[in-house]
Amino acid sequence: MDESRCPDPLAPYGVSKLACEHYLRVFAREAGLSYVSLRYGNVYGPRQDPHGEAGVVAIFTTRMLARAAGDVTVPEPVINGDGYYVRDYVYVDDVVRANLLAARYPDSGSFHVATGVGTDVNQLWELLAELTGYRGPARHGPPRAGDVRRIVLDPRQAGRELGWAPEIALAEGLSRTVAWFRRRLGLDIQR
Image 1: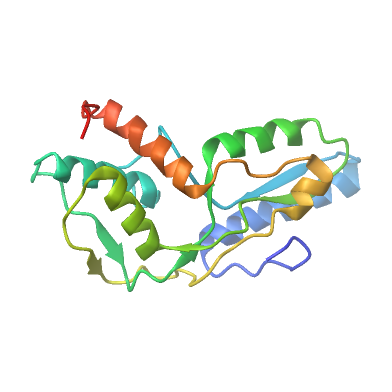
Image 2 (image 1 turned 90 degrees about the horizontal axis):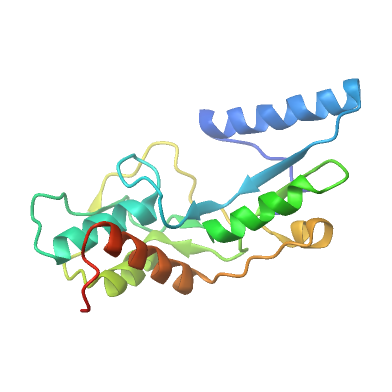
């Protein structure tokens, strides 16, 4: 999806984000203000909260690391639905760079901050299981209500106008993220 396609959110969360963009456009028109709206893919990386319902990378990573280390008091990671929900995972350092570039943008606009690469949750599970040393089976739970099957964002406009492009591939970003959580959990011994 590129920025020319009019978003049509299916959940209240998406509606609230789109409403903010509408407000920005009105203020730009009415008061002559400029704005930049960044539409993030699924941001992941160190320091992400693993205790909420969002942030699949942090949730899977902390649970897989703990279970691989023998801590059976930590719940097993569970894939919602069939695991074929596709998302565009973008590393936090890339997002920070996009924000810094957007702060200097002299005009107004909305930009996707994403990789343009889709990864389904089953693939993500396999990558994280390998990186964490988790050997448990992939468990599937019920699907989450309102989850969209596929969201992959085209970041080329951010490249043309902001000079931004993602630099950290998923495998590298996941490796950095797992290493951070491993240290945070005190599991930074060599496997």
